[in-house]
Image: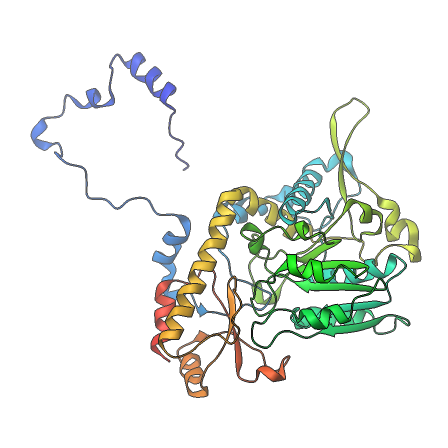
Length: 433
């Protein structure tokens, strides 16, 4: 049963009705010899995450794997509210008259994502971050002048794979990859400048796949000659701490918002987001919920800008995607509402602090990060093979191997730390090295 404490005014009213001035007067009939003379030795209150750790510690796996899908704590209220029957649908509804609640929830998601990214408009979500990225490239080509898609090689390899699939049979569009600096891990600015041109669209990831924080202001100046610029975000938690990517002057910010209230769940479902400048809104893929007025002048939510979509424009639609990840977007909106701006920043700070702790512990064991540039909550290291085998034997997932996608990083491991990783997890890992 929920306990809702009384306010000070309500408490004063209750005491007045009873006829006493202070709460302790209610206990005057109890002999003093049996009353406690000092506060009861009870621990202070615990937050949800600490409480879960206390009771479920033995069942929690130790994992430092990230690479695009992350383990973040989900407040209990998200599961409780999202499971209500009113919300159990994955679709944006066609009948606004009977769907105001669902439409408003999607509208709130759009508003939050636009605010976090520093962009003007957000759609109602995409399938996942990879398709959102590929759709951003398609939108760039749709502007009319773009014939080259220039992608930083430090963008998530899975995302780049989806991009190549999308453009496999697109004559006249070339995909070019920009190398990364082997020392710092950031995009190679000299190579980027050489590829600039009004016929090219540039896409970089922030933080990049190696966890390195890109200098978007410097990239923005170096990329001034590009005809279109986009930023990919694969862990939206970073938006709570880093400068909004939209402040760099980019045209689109697209990526993955699974971290907002959605569990990893064996790889899906995920939650792509897509935010643009106002000038691109009619080229944007996906559904859009807008705020309007009904005939009586009441506030009303509805699907808007639908003339871009498949059910109206058919083969001339802006995208083949004409639905959204409604349930996941709802959970994201609930998560963001629950933690608030300060809570989101606190989660991001916990991730960054945990990452610094792990990096320091590894340095103490002679294991240094491969890249020197600042990171958010992922970084690249190299472990001895025997150390990896020890970790695997103990059921610890140390990270994501990089060699399959980056042969030059043979033996490299991408490690991730979130607020779900404890100091005990870090100690357990380092003791086995």
